[in-house]
Image 1 (spheres, rainbow, N blue to C red):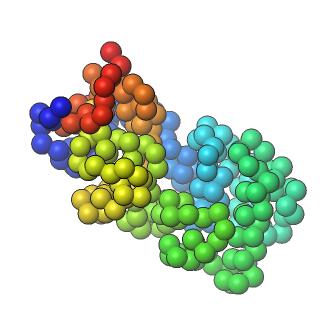
Image 2 (image 1 turned 45 degrees about the horizontal axis):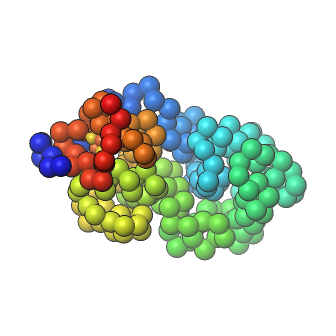
Amino acid sequence: MPAIEPFDWDEVFRRLRAHLAGVPKAAMFELRDRGHAALFEQLAAALISTRTRDETTIPVSLRLFAAARTPEAMAALDEPTLARLLHGATFPEPKARDLLAIARAIHDEHGGAVPDTMEGLMAFRGIGPKIAALALGVALGRPLIAVDIHVHRVTNRWGILAAPTPGKTLAALERILPERYRVEINERLVPFGKVTCTGPRPRCPACPLLRMCAQVGVATPAP
Ligand code: SF4
């Protein structure tokens, strides 16, 4: 259905911030706010978060960082130890293998400095564009958009773009989203997609964006 108010990015983010006060943050942002904002930590946590719920990613990442939070410290661990530290996350053994390879490559081939480009990060096994963008965005403030399933679903419902895949949503957002919101869109829409604009039955009557939203594809909002 057509929106009643014009879509305005500043107003959208202002309302989202207020609406989400008190709602648990997305894992990378929670870890950043707990002092784990280094690029290596964000990269490791983003890798751990793949197919793992935030409620698990946060404690598993904190347990890992208590043992090793730098490439040098992690490179000194063995793979079984690392896999034990990742217990609870999905696929702990493959993630331990990838994390150890990344830590050792950074230590041995990059002089201990984490590559700070999309290409540099994506050269590591296990690191795709969403993880690389999230890590660079959260750790270094680079204006990169990380499109996960929540960002993809919500922005399509707003009616500001019509994209069949997250990759096409990313391309559309790169054209229309102001730089100042490129990191924050993931920070806001992950919890928003969990508590309000949920997958099957979004809570439109309680949504602060209702008057700006075209509700594309929403057949049965929750009462
Ligand atoms: S909850 Fe409903 S009104 Fe709010 S953004 Fe989602 S589809 Fe739009």
